Length: 86
Image (cartoon, rainbow, N blue to C red):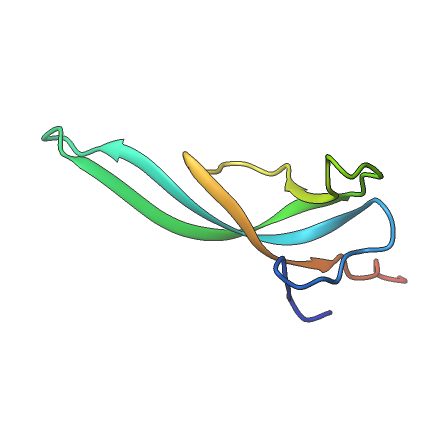
């Protein structure tokens, strides 16, 4: 499998495709006593590279897996591995 590529890297897939993405998130909720609780975490999810040919709307990588928190962002991506041959 490939190495993870940072979204801050200039490399992008050549065409629209499915990817594995590393997602960081913050889930905001209240404890039983009513005090706020921000739970941070990360997960590997399915995502998609969406090339956009428009200067006002740059190409982007999106995640379409759930659950996510109240705030989430993709930090890294990698191409899907090849399927098994048997």
